[in-house]
Amino acid sequence: MEMPIPDPDILSRKARIVARLQAVLPANAVIHDEAQTRAYECDALTAYRCPPLAAVLPTSTEEVSAVLRVCHEEGVPVVPRGSGTSLAGGALPTADSVILGVARLNDVLETDYDNRFIRVQSGRTNLSVTGAVESDGFFYAPDPSSQLACAIAGNIAMNSGGAHCLKYGVTTNNLLGVTMVLMDGTVTQIGGAHMDAGGLDLLGLICGSEGQLGVVTEAWLRILPKPEGARPVLIAFNSNEVAGACVADIIKAGVLPVAIEFMDKMLIRVCEDFAQAGYPDCEALLIVEVEGSTAEIDEQLGLIKQIARRHDPIELRESQSEEESKKIWMGRKAAFSAIGKISDYMCLDGTIPVSSLPHVLRRIGELSQDYGLAVGNVFHAGDGNMHPLILYDANKPGDLEKCEAMGADVLKLCVEVGGCLTGEHGVGIEKRDLMTAQFSPEDLEAQLGVKDVFDPAWLLNPAKVFPLAVTETRRVA
Image 1 (cartoon, helix red, strand yellow):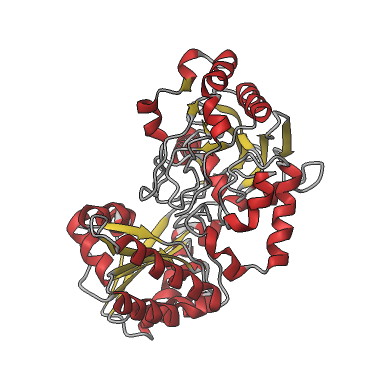
Image 2 (tube, rainbow, N blue to C red):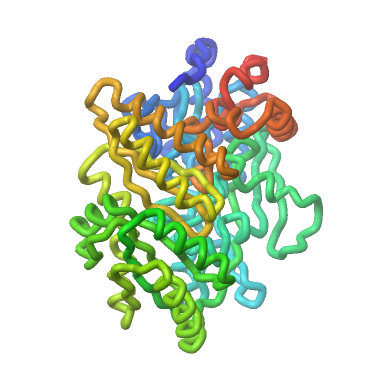
């Protein structure tokens, strides 16, 4: 994976840059010892590593502003970092960059149940947002698999989703406003506590911008009343294609489950060995969950089971208790950990039309045979956000490159059927060079023009999202 060559002038000024950062931050908030900076050399895409020039850990918007002002004046690239759970290399540094971590920005600043919002600092973890309001009967809807660890800052940067995004949407559907610091240190507010906040509606630009436009330090998030109840049903099939067709029919019927999750045979077996969730031995598994009152749940699941039976499932198991519901979800929630126990893997993140599920699953199987690499499929089937897991051996020369080539073919397939390169993991460096498969030169130029406005010096996460050849003249200038 190509990265820009570090600027020797910046490297030669390390002592001065560190001294200036130490002048605006507490002593323990600036990490510059080479051994200690290795903690920030990569994110969850661990195949590529590079210690940064330094890492800083501010605790307030004012400290973030001071850091960015120093880096702007020194011409130093800044890589924003949430919790480092990015699977696309979004927080991968270069040797001449400063990592700006928001982990210490973790306070709840305001809670308003009447208007159903919470304002938090952006380093707060996803799950702890719900933790702050659940005792009062509320929750925060987006639920990435990494929600125990991932930060709201990263959720906003990548527009993260999760298993329940079919009904509740992804981060952009639950984000009301942000406080953001621009590269020159300017603090700005976009949106706010209400849907109709004054000013230009720029929030959609910020959510999903991968730290390219500014550093989000605070966020207004929509919170919702907890549903009266929820109940999943497990549906097993002897064919991936039939399971995909069942998903499409459920969506076409107009019923709106809170989640439809898909797992193929490899993932079922691996997750069962890992979590002992009681999954059946089958080719494909759907977990479909609905919520509401008991009568609403019964009605929705009745229709879903009726649709499923048309596809001849080998097992249809409706949860009868909270304990059974936990077991049904247990394996799915453990999928990434379970695969990581047996093999190195690359987790992809393409999105496709739901109607294309059977065809895409078949083609992924064919690509798996062509490349000689096993693939496990687990994804948010309801909205077509796929997460194929390609297994490889990191210690075998050439295996990583083969895995990346296959991953590129899978993502190109997603675009070919009318989908896109990413649903919730972002582009980062992983999909950077595939952007031309989805966007024309004119499309890319329009996107680059937006960054020119927010970050004219091209210092915020400059090596991400766009092919380096496309951005070279801007970065060099």
